[in-house]
Each structure stands twice: as C-alpha cells, then as structure tokens.
Image 1 (cartoon, helix red, strand yellow):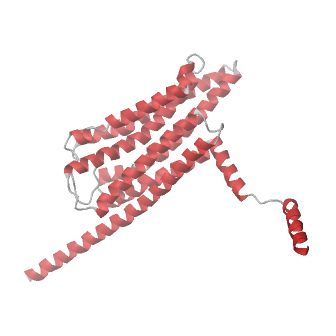
Image 2 (cartoon, helix red, strand yellow):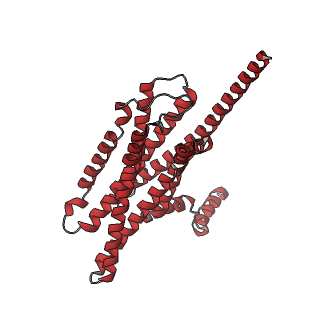
Length: 319
C-alpha cells in the first residue's frame, strides 16, 4: 500500500513538473517571439531616422532612437533570462543569477528613464528655448543621453552588491518579495522616480500652455507650447503602454497567482511591440515617412507609361 502511494505521488510530481516546464517553454517562446518583433521594429525606426534627411534628423527623433536602443537591450536581456530558465536549468550559480538580475533591472530602468530624458528635453524647449540656446542643441542632448546610461548602470548595483538575488528553480532572477526594502528600492528607483518626474513636467507644461491661451499676446509662442504639450502627451502614452506590461507581475507579487506570473512574462515584451507601433502612429513625421515608404513600394505605374514600352517591344518583335 505504501509502495503504491509513493509511486502515485512520484508520478504526480513528475506530471506536475512536466506541465510546469511545458508552460514555461510555451510562455517564454511567445515572449521571445514578441521580443524579436520589437527588435525588428526598433531597428526599422533607427534606420529610417538615419536615412531620412532632413525630416527625421531632429533632436526629438534622436531621443526616440535612444529609447529604441534601450528597448532592444531590454528585449535581449529578457530573452537571455528565458534561455537560462528553459534551456540551462543546470546553471544554478547565485552569482550568475545576480548578474542576470542586474542586467534585467538595468534594461528596465534604461527604457523607462529614456522617456524621462524626452520629457526633460521638452521642458528645455518650453522654458529655456529662447533664453538658453545651448540647452536645445544636439551636443547638450548627447550629454543627456550619456548621463542617462550612466544612471541606469549605477541604479541596479544593489542587485550584485547584496545577496538578495539568488537562484530559485523555475523562477526568473528577480529580487524575492520577502526582501521588502530591496523590493521597495526597485519600485521607487526603476519606476516611481521617473514616472513622478514626468508627471511633474507634464503638469508644468500643461499649466504653461493654459496660461499662454489666457494671455494670447504671443500666438507663435502659444503654438510652440501647444506642440510641446502634444509631444509630451505622446511620451506619457508610450510610457503608460510600456509600464502596463508589469501589471500582471505586480498582481503576482500580491496574490502569488502563477497565472499572473506566466502572463507577466508575455506582457513584458508584448507591450514593447505595442509601444513601438504607437511610436510610429503618434509621431507625425515618422508616420508620414513610413506611409510614403509603403506607398512608394506598392505604387503601380500608370497605363500611359507602360503602353509605349509594350508598343516598342511589339515593333521589335515584328521586325
């Protein structure tokens, strides 16, 4: 009787383990597929900006390309973590897991803080564009991008300095929820700080535009502020799409529902795909460039142009 019970229990454990492994394999494969699509879209945007002169050679599109680079880094790091989870389960090193967690958190903060750089740029244009011309030059924005990447390298250092991240079978290398202080740090440093700053900048520019409408003495300045508000609104929309990918993971941390954990793996990269699609849709110049490119490739020559060629070929055949 005991032998039968033990055999049944072992069989159930093997079945459960196989089901979990299959679930991870399917979910991670889907997420990696979305990551590949996101990388292709990012590369397409970067190539279009580089090749389209002078329409897309602007500071705004430089910052969009910076966000695309951060998104490519994010998708690559997520796919790497999935590869270790599925194909390299024997890699149980705590040190290796900490470094994977470090690069994962670095890629997350790189993407989110890139939107903060865009918001600060709009603030410079709105407030200091006429008084301090140096703030709206390409050189100053290259410095901002350099600072951005320096910050995102420093922020996740607690992941490798502490021992809070360690290998856990079947789980990604994140900070466990039991390390409350470290979890609060990740939430504040990687998410809340940038979101609060972007919100403050958005509210400030909105109030500035509202005052400009009330005192419409300088219509040109009012129109410029309206353009800043439009661009900043797009930044907020794209950031909201990006952040929404982490909602299932937050629900998992609160409720411990495995379904939310698996769903979160997919939404991480799926929302990046959505964000890149909306980047093309919301940015007017980029949207026009893509539309012209598609129209040019699918354009059909009129019959009046083709007809002389056909007649010339017929005459050659008859002769």
